[in-house]
Length: 88
Image (cartoon, rainbow, N blue to C red):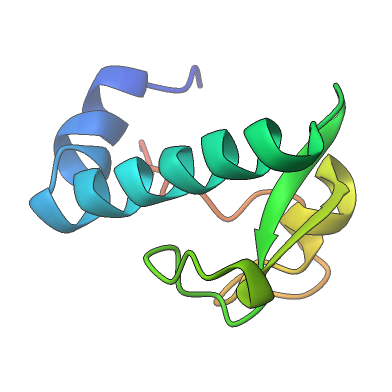
């Protein structure tokens, strides 16, 4: 079964809260990149898991794989926690 990005966006990513969280993460990335220079393959990690808390003390630069393993609410030991539709 192929992944439906359109459906995923409609169900989750288009919600107002998700748009604000995404904008806050992008703001944090720009601020850190401007001040310290984030290199390719690195992500900006929010230590408390709140993407809207962009205080310098809450941000750190980590590898992409490390950051995605630290994501709050992500089930441990699973590679992908994105919502999926079951088809019969």
